[in-house]
Image (cartoon, rainbow, N blue to C red; front, top):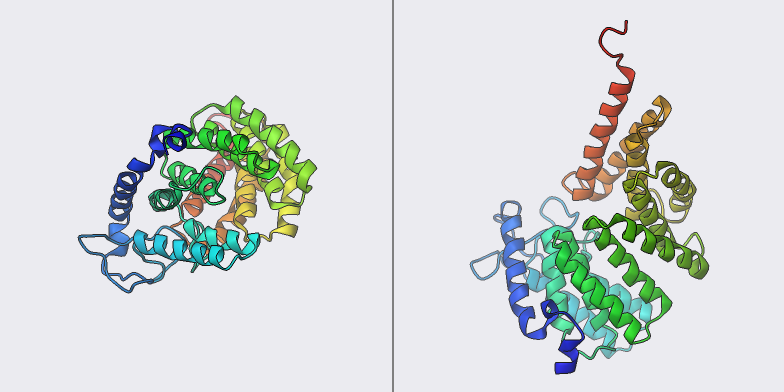
Length: 333
């Protein structure tokens, strides 16, 4: 066990996992308290109490989706155990493992501090397994994503670097290594290391094209990540060129309501209005793109989802930029 712990940072030590989980659950319950008041868990039908309150961090609306984190974790654990016991194929195992980060009702990923709590639940479930175990490495990925969702980016960096090192150490597939690099690049970006993020993302995109072709979901994700980094670094023409190539492919392959398609459209609209050299036509296209994206996001994810709120913020910014461009300066008449 000492060798196992030495392979990962102290944050991931097995003897600390329970405490990290308990702290994360308390944070998630507190953040969801107003939304969950008077509701019941859809899994155990119990209410929130002093032992554990309820959370909801997906896209469920109305009276749907309220649950204890412990119930969500138990549900995911049982589904994965059944897959192992019945020797199901990798596709079925992957689908069941998604319950650690994706709601079984609305089929949207958990976000924010709820994602973080489930990340710690997942990690504490599999941390005791050997390094080469097929579930231990994905569990580290769920935790890294959860920490990023809760904006614990320094901790996420520690986890993502450890995961990439472990993937290389155990001789993981090229696909797994590219996934780890993609997550690490996202963390670099969140920490303001934009040049480093872009370099890694360009490498991932190039390899994804070779391995899977331009229509694969992971290739589209890698392309969108590159475009985002190019926009952050104000390389707007390169970003727009790449996204104009990606958008019709995403719509055709994934559909307009897919989460990745929506992210691509948001990125494109944002790049259009943030470009200081944007023309009136560019700004009008930005507004139209973001209006369409907001409408679809509201229908698919709901008005309270963080992504929908992000689209609304960018739409306001785009409209402001268009009005500013169309309004003549004082004294110009």
